[in-house]
Amino acid sequence: MCVVCILFRSHFTLWRSRGILYSMLTPSAALEALLFTSGEPINKNRLSELLEVHVSKIDGIIESLKTELSNRGLALVETSGYVELRTSAESSKYTEKLRKNDLTRDLGKAGLEVLSIILYKNGATRSDIDFVRGVNSLAALRSLLMRGLIETISDSSDKRKLHYIATTDALAHLGVTKAEDLPQYEEMSFSLKKSNDELVDNSAV
Image (cartoon, rainbow, N blue to C red; front, side):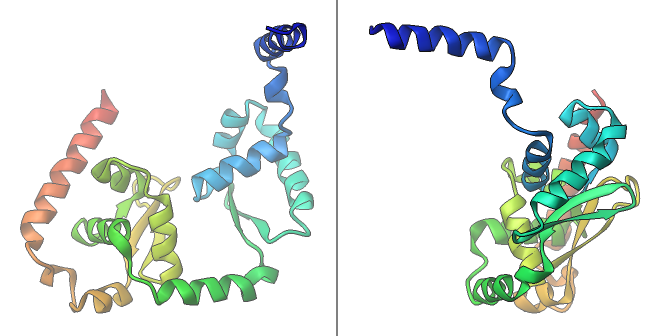
């Protein structure tokens, strides 16, 4: 192996052990990554834990990210101690084109699965949906929200969570007037309730 390669590998190992490689990401950039990955509002206290900084510094990091996003198509939205990454108002004329294009396409397997879970459970959180499907459902949820087939409300048991519910457009899309008209509604609802009970039990362990 060449001398340069040996030196690089030794320095790379040293930098990684000292956390230098991770420090290259600024706090505002890390915040952007967290909000993008979540796809949902995150409480400021939770952000302080994830970013490993004191909660008193969160507002400053948020303001830094707002400044960095000022000339881009994204914006930060703050509501009741929560922060969310959304598309900016200025980008609406472009995102609307995408939304109209998405509405003309089929829901796809993932979209149908997620919508079915929400309907048969009479509303569900993202963790409920991910547990039933066994995979990350963020992309499918975003698509359904964009199409207007689902909407979000605050979870009554935990204000930090969002509860997804189906809209009347979703029922019309499936050709029914109420969720109870869906095939095997009672059986599927019971099965999903059982799965939810298992999730609660596992969380309590």
